[in-house]
Amino acid sequence: ETGVTQTPRHLVMGMTNKKSLKCEQHLGHNAMYWYKQSAKKPLELMFVYNFKEQTENNSVPSRFSPECPNSSHLFLHLHTLQPEDSALYLCASSQEGLAGVEYNEQFFGPGTRLTVL
Amino acid sequence: GDSVTQMEGPVTLSEEAFLTINCTYTATGYPSLFWYVQYPGEGLQLLLKATKADDKGSNKGFEATYRKETTSFHLEKGSVQVSDSAVYFCALSDQGSGTSGSRLTFGEGTQLTVNP
Image 1 (cartoon, rainbow over the protein chains, first blue to last red):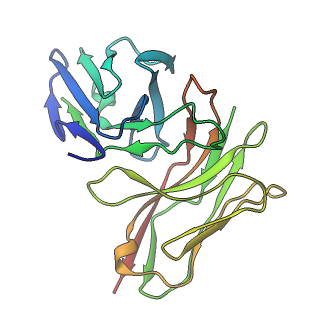
Image 2: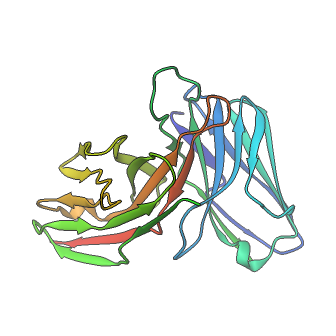
């Protein structure tokens, strides 16, 4: 595998289900991100992990729970979701802390298309 | 806070037509600016970037110039192809510290369809 992979690619769940999204990056990066992409809206940054530590939570409801067991893996645990949570969830990674680099490019996975019934 | 506004789509063009997708931004400080592209069924890919005023980013025939005076970063291509059909996102970055990660603020995206 290369780049950033996400599983599953599609997920349909009921509001009472518990499921998890998985992201894996094969780039040796030290920062990982979860974004939410809804129709007609800009991408929304949800969580940021740097060196496995959560450094940002953009007022995301507690029904979304991230987990970063190591610098290569990122999970998003889902429970008691609402229909308005249906969206494409994108994972990204980057290498942070590079001296002299003006911007550290984020590499995105293909996303998980989530539908909440 | 920071924000990015891009022209609404969808945009439909014929092959070899000239493309412009407008993007303006508001930000404190001096952000870096980007265009990302999302092909059907795929994640976002960085298309081009510019990190300071008057820089021109270019890639695959696409160009965008960082205009500080008009706070704009319009995407252009002289002759589009069917394979350019995708969603294009304008974004800016307030460069995070070395330990907190970069922050990207995206526009809503513009769907481009190029017909043969």
